[in-house]
Amino acid sequence: MRMDWVPVSAALLLTGALAFCLGAFLMPRSDDAVDSLRIVQEQGGQWMTAAAILAIAAVCLSLGVPAILTLVQRRGWATGLLAAVVLEVGFIGTAAFALLMVFFHSLVVTGTVEAHGLDDVASETGLSVFFWIWIAGLYVGELLLAIALLRARTTPVWVPVVLLLHVFTLPLSTLLPEWPSKGTSLLLVLGFAGVAIHAASPENRRRLG
Image (cartoon, rainbow, N blue to C red; front, side):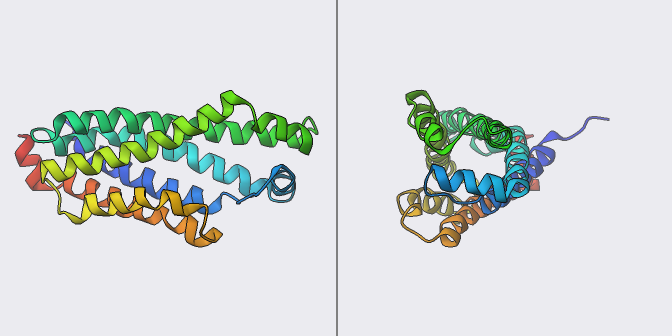
């Protein structure tokens, strides 16, 4: 008996979005190296929990990409495919960030790194490039996905609009207080929930058939 993979992929997409949002809420916000060290020393359990959840989110989101592609089989295919590739870069970056969190935690626990040394590490060009590629992968991929969905018209218009709203909150995230800033990730959950629901809908499955 053949297993229908689209609902499974859609469920993983939604699970990944929820896990990403939970990881964002659990991730303590720090302003400088000294604050980061203090957080890891005092809230090490929460730090590692956020890392584990972000790693799970990365895996689930990656496995949810096929469900996204089912919504752009005709119109918007090229943009949708590009969005999927760019999003995968962001999802892989999320997994890498989670591993960096674990690595940083181990350095702090063993006393290998101190505040002044952390400042030197944070200013490394390679690490800065990684962070920019990771963030660009998530937000540019989300922007391309919203454009593809607007062209494909396989979801209600609110789905790509919510994704666009999440993209546009990026410049504001550093200006908002901690909890409102983290709360913008709920827009990602809402948008991906719309994608997952419509990817697994009978109408979309008939269209694929």
